[in-house]
Amino acid sequence: MSAAPFISTLVAVALIPVAFLFTHAIVSGRRKLRYHSVTGGVGIVWDLGLSIFYMLYRLFGGNVESHVLDIDPGMVVYFAVHGLIAAVVIGLELVVLATGMIQVVRKKKVLLHKRLSLPLYVLWFGAFLSGEVVYVMYYIL
Image (tube, rainbow, N blue to C red; front, side, top):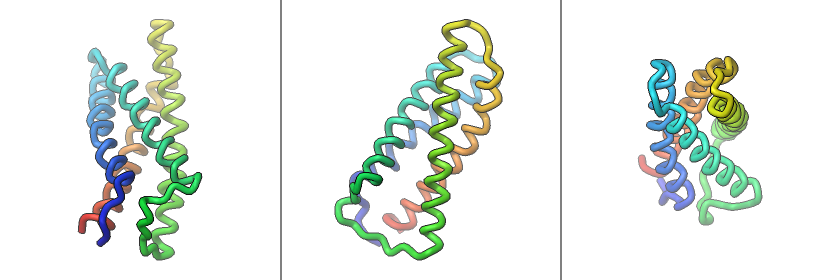
């Protein structure tokens, strides 16, 4: 176990409220309750900001405060799959956000929004939980 890098800790902790926002949005949206567009929109914008920042940070050589993880080939595969799922999630978030904004402006339902919301929620939660598990395995246990 090594000390957790600040940037990894920041992202791991900052994504926890997104889980609550997404859960509220999906449950209240399915029940046709108010405010799901607010919690969903805030959750998506929050997640997009964090995810894109972290991906760009790592892409352009941002290391995690010179911490080096001992990564076996299985973890390389995990990181590749996790990154691919995260990219798909970002694409889904952009479409769900856009269709949600169209619904608010036009005051008319967009079927694509409803159809993509649940797959987005499931994929996002899978990526979120897998990332949290890896963080806990490498830095806490």
